[in-house]
Amino acid sequence: MIKHALLLVLLLTSGAFAEDRPNILFIFSDDQNYKTLSCYPESPDWVHTPNIDALAKQGIRFERTYFGAWCMPSRASFLTGRLQHGIQTMRMQGQYPGSVYDPQQCRFWPAELRKSGYHTAQIGKWHTGIDTGNGRDWDHQIVWNRPGHPENAGNYFYDQIMTFNGVDRKVDGYSTDNYTNWAIDYIKGQNRDETKPWYLWLCYGAIHGPTTPADRHEGKLAGNNAPVPEDIFGPWPNKPAYLANLNAWQEGPDGKPYRRSKKVAKSNFNTNTAGQGYDDWVQQYNECEMAIDEGVGRLIQTLRDTGQLENTLIVYAADQGFALGQHGMNNKVAAYDAAIASPMIISHAGKIPAGKVCAHPINAPDLVRHFCDAANVDLPWRTDGRDISRLLTDPETDDWSQPMLMTHTGRRYGSDTDQMPDETGMYEVGGIPWYALLRDGRYKYIRTMVEGEMEEVYDLDADPEELNNLALLPEHRTLLLSLREKAIEELRRTDAKFIPHLPAPRTP
Image 1: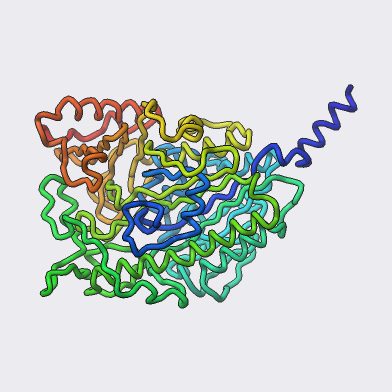
Image 2: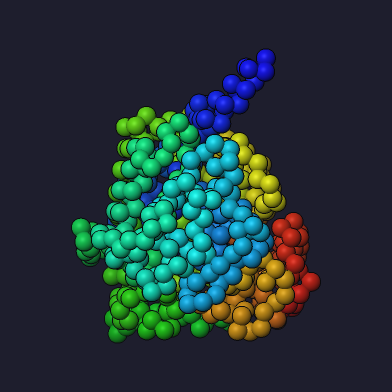
């Protein structure tokens, strides 16, 4: 009996039962508005992403997901399973985007996957501390370490300094294609133990500025007209005051929108020329997605060719969105769906329904919890994730009453968010103040953490573009108070220490 027990332990730890636990392929894009995917009905009719659409047909497309307000906190949430205010010791310091953390207090869950018998890999953009976790969290890494090489941090598409398992090397070629090629090598078995199930986090740098399509795609969408958002020129009297300072568009002599100066647009590493027409900008933005879609097609075909497709959980998502003129913006971070809502598709052959759409939003900790559940891994620390397994078996259910929370606390994390910052700290990311966002069914609640500022409530079924702030209407006072209390309850559940210091909102 003892011999049999020892043999079982050896088999489990050697990966002999790898087929009982899925491989996990997490494809992650950057600054991607959900309207760039043709499987989302809100996209222009000239947008075509056939490979990502095929993935949606094989799985579940989520109408909205909320992973973070900008690149770094979104990634930090995906590494820890916590919302931004719960991520301890993560700090930005040194030349932007320099950042550090204590790996003993800020643990990343791929390390737990490794301990359980998974082979872990990360390829592409790294934006969460100079320490990339190679050899601790990851068995294999080919990463563009932006915090580690701030002088190279603007090279999103060409001439990148890549770190190959701890060794730096400058590489040629278009980054999207490079990342896809390295990921395909890994899926085929290079740089990994083929007896183990694997987790690969593939982080593209596209569509982030300087938004640069591959040469083969540049100009492919020229001549198409992009639907202009209704409130692109403003004013925005039913929204917080900071929004007026983000106004990135002006009306030209022909009545069409043109970009203001980059200083007003507040876009990091965005080299698109001031005065660029709206149609031209949206075309360029969508052309940058085309190489990702090609890459997704190649990745799926590789899984199919190697016999791994049936046992691979696949997720396509973005760190957050990017507003394309909505509410006058040309940026991320702000609490509106255009700026922060991510596209997301989950596919797992034979395990979840195919061709379904889920209206219930999820956040980054929710997805981390699902990954761990699928891999049969228990994390030895508290996370903020909800159990979304029911949404993956019955994505169109109406029987779902768990509100979803996301927080934006600027460049501060963990205990550094226990107190409210001064005005400079409050607005340190793109001129957009701290906020808490709650989704509860069809309603979205936003509490901007500025003394005397208005709250916001939107009915996303009736008003998907978030034009009508119900919080200002007396007839919706009961709804406002209910959502406010639910947001505070979720902040308590996720151990937000700043609750006693929340600035009082404007009295309606």
